[in-house]
Structure formats: structure tokens, C-alpha cells
Length: 337
Ligand code: NAD
Ligand code: ZN
Ligand code: ZN
Image (cartoon, rainbow, N blue to C red; front, side):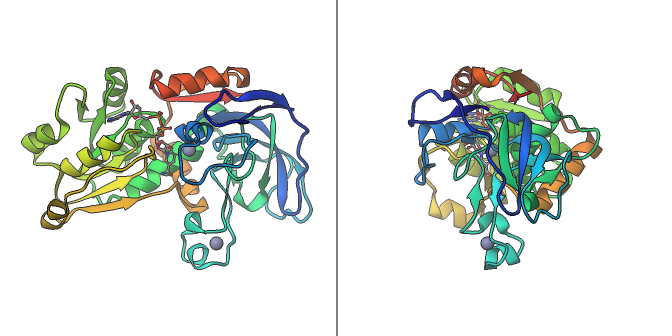
């Protein structure tokens, strides 16, 4: 099968012929029809994070396709089922985190496209109980970006402690952020979109953002405090450390900032400001299988859809370059077979 493989950090992916994998106990073989390209895949290629993937590795954790073979003991899926294979490839199911509804924090978890091979290939194996069935009527290209980007921002916004009518900042209007604008609207929030690129901000406005701020020419903290006295919540998906400190500054007293973006680096925090304004800061990582079902359902109900560019597997290095320079609005989805 054709696959795009990371063989060395900070080098182009290699297009390789790999054997079609065999599903083991509890696993299924999925014929990949589409796979979204998440900025996390670029972090994997760059080796940006403290725990790096072992190489060679096939990235991709927004894979969708159909089940074509069952390993021994698969009791949940059937051949022909249309499924998505998310970042949470497998979790143990017995630890404290798994048992308390936080399987995304399982410390034995395996991550698709990071610890095990992912969807930048014509086939992949997934655990039957961790591949999520896609709703009827949702085509593969439309479904792919929801499997990570949609899920992650749905969960992140749920963690923002905001109520309908509240102001919520979405910082970074890329693959995640442009879906967050739509999920935020569906949850009844007034959305403030923040980015460095006018094309992304225009997209956010078309998708229902009430206010847009380009941080290249406006100080977002001063502006938002003057305009509305700060927002109630923020979801930061920007791939830039200063955006995280700015989001804290954009809060009104008692606000909650949820961190989704994962640029390498740190940002400064004023202890005095955090305490005196009682700001909550929390990280949020993808979502559980239950969250994914809810995120897909809400997308279908509210007509939440990614703005998609399609590309071929062999164009993957060009797609990565565009992502590095933030050139394309929305999500790029690799179309396979
Ligand atoms: P993307 O490249 O599509 O979007 C990033 C956006 O950030 C772009 O629109 C860019 O213009 C914008 N940006 C850059 N600098 C900015 C700044 N200073 N202020 C405001 N916006 C700025 O990336 P993506 O696929 O949406 O992923 C975003 C981040 O989220 C990545 O770091 C990715 O690894 C991470 N991520 C986290 C989770 C999670 O579960 N926490 C899940 C998926 C992705
Ligand atoms: Zn992702
Ligand atoms: Zn566990």
C-alpha cells in the first residue's frame, strides 16, 4: 500500500510502499478513504514535543474509511462499517482515568499516527472498540476534520465554563479554530475570533463570529477590555506561545482560558493577575469516545462543517509547507482511494 512516512525529524515525509497490516486480536483493518491533516502531524514531523514519536512512523489521526477485515474477537464492528480512527487509538479501560471518564488521560494510551501508524496510508489497523462509527449521510471528506479538530474544540469549549450568551474568544482560526467558531455559535456563545491573517478572520466572520481581531495590527487585550470589558472564556488553538498570554489578558474577572494549541515553548503568567482576577487556566486534550459521538451529533444537527481543501497523499509535503506558513484557511484533507 502507499503510505507517507516520517523517517527523520524536520525532513520531508517519504512516500513508501508498505505491506498492508494484519489486524490482531480486537483490531480491524480500515481502508482509508480520507484523512485530515492536523497541525499535530506537523509537530510530529518536526519532533516538536518532549515525547517524540518513534520513527519510522505514518502520521494521521483524522482517518475515515470502511472496515474491510476483522481480527479475532471483534464484537462491535462489522465489515463495511464506516468509521473514524481518532488520536486516542487505545486506552487501558481499567485505570483511574479510564474509569472516571477521562480515558484521554490514560497513561497507557496509544496515539494514532504518533505511537502507532495512522491514516496517511491506504490502510490502517484500529482497535474495534476505539474506532467510531460515522453517522449516515456524512461523507468521508466532511467527516475527517471532525475526528480530531471538531472533537477537540467541542470538548475544549465544553471545558470553558461559559453559558449561552457569554463572550468566548477563539484564538487561532485554523483547522481547529474555524470549527470552534461554529461549535461556539451552536453552544450559544458570542464569538471573538483572533488570528494573524485577514483571510482566516473573514472566514470566521462568515461562520458567525461577532467580532474579529487581527493581532498583527491591533493589541487584542486593550481592544477587548475597552470594547466589552473582556470575555468570559477563551479557547486557544493558536500555534504561537504569545497568544496564550494574550488570551489571559483578554479575560474579564473570573474568566476561563482553555489551552488546545501545542506550540513548543512557554508563556509568562502574572501570579498577581491570576489571583486578583480569579482566572482559570486549563489544558484540554482531544476528547473521549463519548465526546466524539456528541461532537459528530452536534455537527449534524447544527450543520457544522469544515472548510476543506483536498489533496492527494503524494502532495503531503506541500500540504505541510502550507501549514507551516499558515497559508490555507480551513482544513486540508487527503483523499485516498
Ligand atoms: P492550523 O495550522 O490549522 O491553525 C493554527 C492557526 O493559528 C492559524 O490560523 C494561524 O494563523 C494561527 N496563529 C498563528 N499565530 C497566531 C497568533 N499569534 N495569534 C492568533 N493566531 C495565530 O493548526 P490546527 O490543526 O488548528 O492545530 C492548532 C494547534 O492545536 C496545534 O498546535 C495542534 O498540535 C494543536 N492540537 C491540539 C489538540 C488537543 O487535543 N489539545 C488537538 C489537535 C490539535
Ligand atoms: Zn489533531
Ligand atoms: Zn487507562
